[in-house]
Image (tube, rainbow, N blue to C red):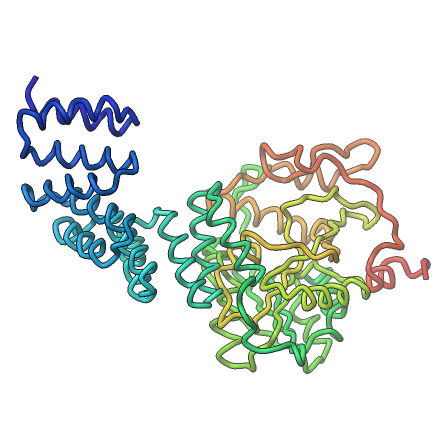
Length: 470
């Protein structure tokens, strides 16, 4: 067998974890050709895997002298030197690998680690950023970027990058644990104290006339300012959808929510028109691009949907607990009220309620994805009532059509076309109360609606819909 074929076979053994077989072949080659650069390289890798760093260093060093154009050998030599704690020499060899292969993403990543270990964090961040520019799907680099920003005390940037790592690799335990630590703010001093709770509430509104007034009133006396960002056009330039084999055009105006908010005449409320072509990170944009440049920085931001309504005891409990626990982010539990207001849906563990953010720990808001929070948040013991399934027939109709159109546009799980009529409009507790989820294939995730005591509803809802209950 030709030497090149033997080398190829040995590397295949090595890559499949059969180090003994790889060592035997490379050893036989080196007996005959002691200056075979590839065999020396492979032999060094095997010693490295076995923990013999000195022999690994000796063999790979000899390999790069014999073949100074082998980018992989320089990269592996850098790894051995990094393992031996010789960071400066490791960085030198990573640079040589990158010079030979400018797109050597692993070399950029490992050079970043070596620089970070050498307390050159800003240079490490530059390396990581070059790595993700080459390979935007490299989850480990995003995690390393997060750690670097965490070490600099920039929690907002750290959380953004840990989330990117988890979106690319959902089971990535290191990124998950790092995000948990960042969210809880462990090991970081406050940038300012909570001597005064300057609290802003932020809504993103598209439709919401049914419950927006009750929602605002339920938090009005507990916050210093209320920002309502509203829009008339759905994200993604969606203007119509196909429903029941017909093209349905969306109206220019879905409801009178904005007019109702204006009618409150509250100096705390700021109504701001803002159109975004994507639903991703809208709240990040609202805070970082609109609120922080123009208004005094608050200590707390609370994000709410237009259908969220707090009970009096629960809004106070939420704020008190959030401050006491000193979280960076946290979310409430939520009670999802079904149509008719006398039933609720069983608790869905992954659903996000109102989201609280401690801006005294952050320079700006990190990526908040689509639900207004981050991927990993502790849950407060408090809860908010969510009335998104209890809106009027007109509002639910348009919400349903928008959901169909948006799922088609984004490629998300498709909304069941028949859900509005079959599951919601014709819902009956006794006769038609099974598998209520609106996404196709997920129906059993909401198995049924269950009775709920009117007395447990927020005071403002009881006052409006059940005045006889007193």
